[in-house]
Amino acid sequence: MSDLEAVTTTEAPATGVRRHAADRSRSLAADAWHDLRRNKIFWVAAVLVVLVLIMAAFPSLFTSADPRACTLSQQYQGASAGAPFGYDFQGCNVYARTVYGARTSIMIGVLATLIAGLIALIFGLSAGYFGRWVDAVLSRFIDIVLGIPFLLAAIVLAKRLSSGTHSTGILAVTLTLGILGWTTAARIMRSSVISARNQDYVAAARMLGAGPARLMLRHILPNSIAPFIVVLTILLGVNIASEATLSYLGIGLKGDAISWGIAINEAGPNVRTAAGPLIWPSLFLALTVLAFIMLGDAIRDAFDPKLR
Image (cartoon, rainbow, N blue to C red; front, side, top):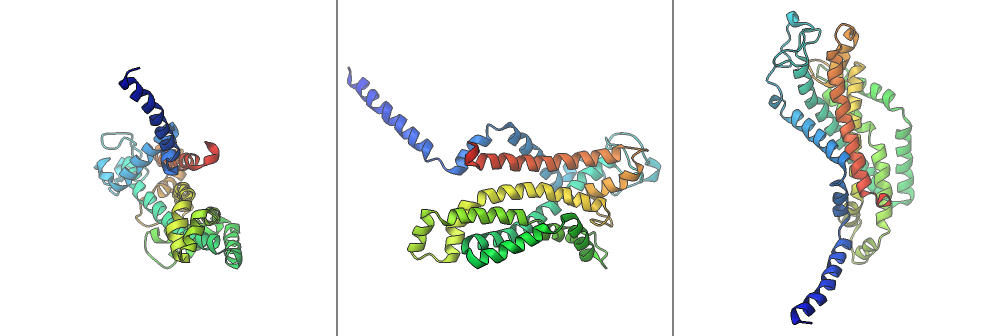
């Protein structure tokens, strides 16, 4: 055997060992991304989410029509140039109002999710880390909020927050959904923190003198945040649907606000005359909510070691 063959023979197993060690040392996020790249549902949901976010941020890229320019002479007219979805009972461009409605719906969904996420993070992190009576009190409070019927509480709270004002109701709906929608995320965060606080690296950091704040923010939170983010992703889609529900019931957005829920509410009584003004915003709403839920499910499956 030549020297070159000997070197090749001895280096090949070593290379294989190094590759195997690199695969084993791959982080949880890297493993999750490796699974997500091969998940077709994830890519379909991600493409839909990106398109909706671009539509919400830059609606002028999708239409040059004014969603508030309504002419009664165009009432229930069919598709035309610049109005592929036709016109509604007020002579408004259905396509333009559907595109611009994404901005309000997405904005309320995102802000409400951030509020709910902040509340859930505080409650879940505190209950999971401190335990004992703190966990008992916070957990019972979470159970009380969770036991309140969501739709009934949302109706009462939204009407209360928007009473006596002449605004569009965006702030009232956002606060309502944020205040009522944090319980599930708090429970998930609490469970993740309880699991993480018993790990060896937390005990080692505590022995080195790390205080509660440092332990929670630098050691426990980064290692328990993944399930929490997954729940918030699903909650975002739920909040978008909840805003549409409240607006459809007439207690959500009002005034000159443009959203999918308002469009569905206005088109409902005239569906026998023209179904398009009801179908198109309903379709956009359904696809958006489904995309966020599918995205959250795909991320959850990728981060769940039991499903590997």
